[in-house]
Length: 627
Image (cartoon, rainbow, N blue to C red; front, side):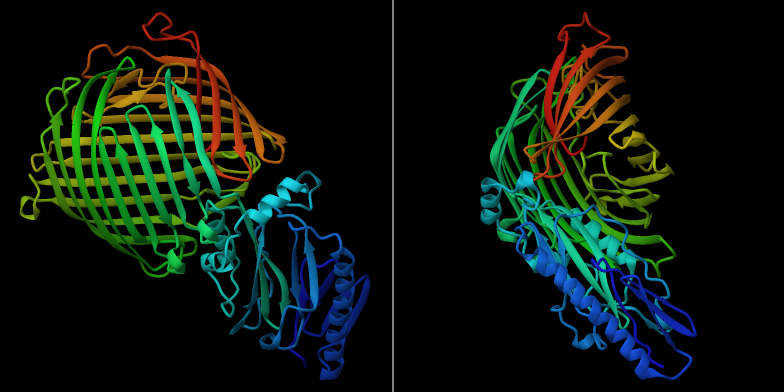
């Protein structure tokens, strides 16, 4: 009896294979072939299998040859060979033309995954197909300019894609690992989309194709934004895929609400394929400087057994305190912080749940001084040193959904729909260099309350604070967030989002704010401030099919904002609930800076119209990470 299976998936000529204890049946081009496995006629069965593979080879090769002359630069050819021995297979017989990148589906589960229980399916060949920025098989992108852009663009190196994968040839086949690898690829800024699929199954070997599409990575950073009555701008250069290595660098001159700076950033999420991530940042500000370094090996996958981190942060800046949209006081702060931790997964993965522990150390030195232009907040915060070891326990679940038109426009999104939680406790003591004793507590929990084809309801609660030995709390922060997405149509949805922030023992230079950038878009930035805040936003979203020049996707929104920040120690803080209505335009690039969405909003205040500084309307423009 022959123990030989040969399947070819996603081919132009469909082959269907069914098998029972007595027979194996192969249907090709509407013709059925059957062999009796109970009779030890191995020669008959072998001839049957090889004959059908040969017929499929001839048919598919002919189809591929017919398409060869019309194949554009945006197309990719996949070749698969069906053989008796996977160790001697190559990629020269079957060919399949792929004209465009499809939205990813869940990788197929192979039923009856082993001939014998101890002999599971194994991954055979892993084919990497890298598609350029523009798909010239589409008439809208098959023009001289876009073809020239494809030639000029430096493609992501094949090893960079391969090093992101959680599997390799010879590993046991696991559809969940394929799904997670696709998610990791889609997280990268230098790729606009990625899909992983089974293309052939031969002799217990599963051949895999990984398809990615690049984005235009070298871009000028030019943005002029107006938000809450203030003009902001950024001018610089950025490359999210330096020489095709996946590394990112940028340099930009920026002006935001607080300062003007020159920022330099270098990042690599998978340095030389080692799973080590490196981040370097330096800001040369008009009020100080900021230098940040981080090296870590994160829990990059759900099955990762260990992780670690080392970081150093030096920050020197002026921080303003606001009321009524006007800066009322200012303070200079110097912060030196070092963090390190090591973590491991606890035991084996239980179904789809993962539990991990971490242990680490934090050293944080904060000092404060007055500034010359404005008075300091009263009282001036005391200098403080925290030095504490900590231990944490955290859990999450392997539950993700792949959807479109939630936070992005016509783009694949991987949404976490499980539960996650964290408990972390540390103890700062003078014997370790601290100024006084503190217990440092950090708690959080997030949960998907409901998930269906039309509805997504999620919430998250967190608590952070320092508690002295006498039970007094300092910088205690309690936060709660809830978001409801209701899909009304494939290209239309409704959002309801609410948040509540509460603090106790907050040092005087810290505050919650509302207005402009922090919600209530019909008011100037930081119009209300305080130590308590609530906010509700409801938004109707339209995700259109408009794809301007095949470069920019377009969406619209109508919204209502309401909220209140109160208990500010500063005078001049408006009281009462802020509310506004408005409409907005959303623009998202499909070929560069994928994931960034430009917001142009026109908002009309419904309350406080007679307050100083409140205009008849606010026209705001900014760039965010979501719709």
